[in-house]
Length: 127
Length: 265
Image (cartoon, rainbow over all chains, first blue to last red; front, side, top):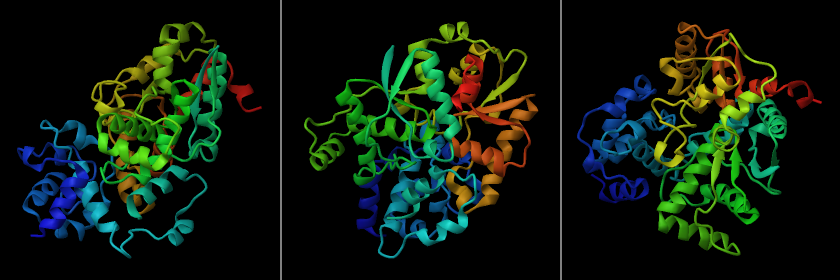
């Protein structure tokens, strides 16, 4: 367990993972559930356990759509998406660990793709 | 004529010009003047919820402060801008440390502490114009049209920051549809995510989400879907495989008010 990383994720997310009662409603309502190796409720208890590096190395951190469904629907106001965000930031803030290279952007474009998609991806994937 | 500060955002200047032009012409027809701040910057598209992220929140604060110095409420129309700007405003009001770091960096003439009132354009229609008044100004009614409102995620959530409507049983877009004479269609997926920016790296997931939304609306007999979000419009049109028409709500508004043709002149 990496205590320093756990502290960093807790501080950055502002989430109290101990409030979670493991009801699984966050994962039940997550639109990316099928695409994730670790699901929102697992993020919460793995952070509680300090198992941060496993999450940082999983593609699950790039599957969160930031739709805030788990934030609004959590009966204990744990706000799991904020934990996912903090873990993803811990990963992309590492030197050389951006998830997207700006050089890749031109080949992703089509005539209708809104700028909003690109700036959002930059916020999520790149530091 | 009432004047508001109006924030278009990056996409309304480029791929979502319809959302913008119809919003402007309709506001004028409703006796509302929209004034754009001089030097606005892109909001960033997504709000970074992390408490130790400051730089990514600055552009939204600059927009909020610009409205404050003009002493006017701020109107947004793109769902993403609305979401980012309202969440920024909420966190500045509720997180003193974040507010102090932001103000320490910006060195504004007077610190910004969440003073600006932010309305989504739909909230302006509901709370400033009033849907009853809007209904009286309709010249081309959508009578007989079954219209499905697509909220997606960014208009409503997180509800404590956005405070726009009931996040699970919203009515604001349905009330808008009634005001322009249409019949709202309620369907299960109206406040679920379209896939958003995942379209950039996982088309299958975007297709799965957006087709679920379109199927849900079609199953309830919708003739068309309306949205406030350029990325929702893109996903629903390009990734869903459905032929159901998707429009910006401002296009229907302009048509109802009889200003659609002149909007494009």
